[in-house]
Length: 378
Ligand code: SF4
Ligand SMILES: [Zn+2]
Ligand SMILES: [Zn+2]
Image 1 (cartoon, rainbow, N blue to C red):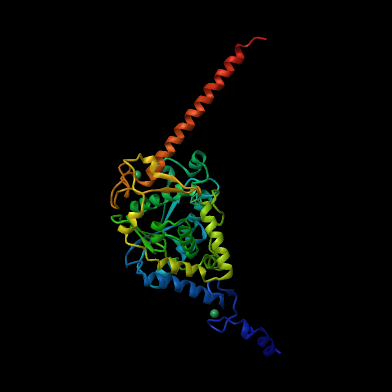
Image 2: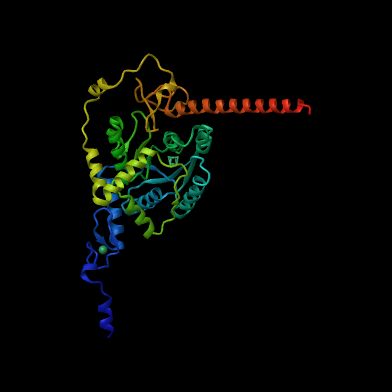
């Protein structure tokens, strides 16, 4: 009887993991629809990231690396897996969590609380850099001044510089981020649809840096599917924050995301296929391409270098300056005379001053109205 019970509990051959052939398959891998067990899933997920790190020579022994930590699923899994692989394969890395506080009430304050718990759970040092300290603006103030439409453009430019500054403060010249395969495929699609050739060229790079900049960035999750990151976080019971930012992602990115999700539903490999296509785009020599660019008119004021496109996105154009230059205002490395963050800040200060004047005028108007009413005799 006992033997019969044991036999009954054994999974059918069709239910067995396609990798180890001994445990019951519990997961259908989003990447290739393979049916596998939990342990094999952990193994393939971690091994693929390790292979990406090794084949791209992302790190060197003894390197100090900052993990851009937002408290969300991607960066939480990244911190967990990097710590694990560092110990398992003796990378010899000195890992630190680096968080940015954009100043978004109800979103970033809660997610930073998650990062602080992760710091305890993973026993890693944590540095938090805020927009308020760096720019004297919070994202909430920026949105109330400039509107929600371009919030992610402002936020992206400020975050990039904040991460660099935070890393420099810690004496670190390598920041890893949790950008995954879905993010990268979306970016390729978006740049392709916009005809943004300059960005398309860089959109699949696993490591990026400006010439002369001491800070490099890399994406160890370049080939990791978002759905697999979520599954991993779920089965490992990782502590992450899942609320979306109150300011919706760029409208156009949202459209590219939807398009990609629809394609993925029909053909799961399309995410990797789009990345591989992006990696193999061969663009014309820069000199040739520059001939097709519009020539800038006589010296344009800084504000004219910010261009709002028809789809509502903001373009920050580089005109005539080479990488390695420093911003005349803040000293940050910039291909322009004034860095992108300072250009945006300049525009914001103008809007803030205008709002103040409008408020003053309305106060003066109100006072005048009160005086007029008081002078009226009935
Ligand atoms: S969704 Fe946009 S505004 Fe919100 S944190 Fe991300 S980039 Fe910033
Ligand atoms: Zn298995
Ligand atoms: Zn600057």
